Picture 1 (cartoon, rainbow, N blue to C red):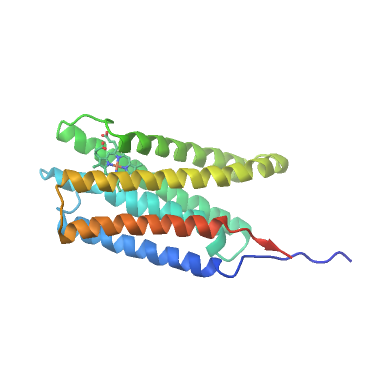
Picture 2 (tube, rainbow, N blue to C red; picture 1 turned 90 degrees about the vertical axis):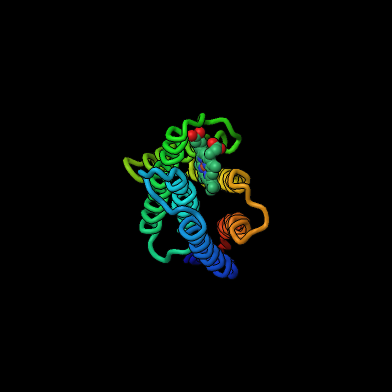
Length: 224
Ligand code: HEM
């Protein structure tokens, strides 16, 4: 009788993914404190244009970055059959995609209302490219892995590319978020203040979150 093969994750995947969830929670709290306490708050329609801008970091950080990070980790953090993990991976990415659309729409609206030009910074170039790649990757994966689904052999060939490209896009999103935070820091003329510390800590924690997500999923599964 052939020996049964079991596949387990190295023991420290669990603490790393727990650490990533805690970092996500800390980013969530700090972004809310920044935008609601130190800044003007959030609104799609207001004479206070800062409120419209604030929707951009709100949706990009809390929606796009945190949800895509959680989606990437879904296969490691969710116990259950593979189809359930896959569904969760797909839905969390869909939430990230919708949040990204709203966040990018908000910053274009803000620019239009203050009559500022569009797409003139490195941040906006990397950001839009990342977002387009993200959308294409989601659509391609949906049709290949969920419905109508490519043939098994083709899916097996796509899968490693999907995983690597997904991680690359996620890291591009992190670069975008970090450059966005630095840009905003300077637009606001922050120097040494509580708000400056909060913005910098958001950047540091987002970076640590990305590292935890990447390490958590890059660890190979051990098969016995
Ligand atoms: C992955 C997440 C992000 C993506 C994909 C993204 C994408 C973009 C895009 C495409 C624009 C150009 C809009 C236009 O030209 O009208 C933009 C503008 C801007 N974003 Fe982001 N962004 C992200 C995260 C952030 C974050 C976290 C901040 C921090 C506050 C931020 C700050 C800004 C600022 C200040 C602008 C206006 C100046 C400029 O066009 O560079 N972004 N973003």
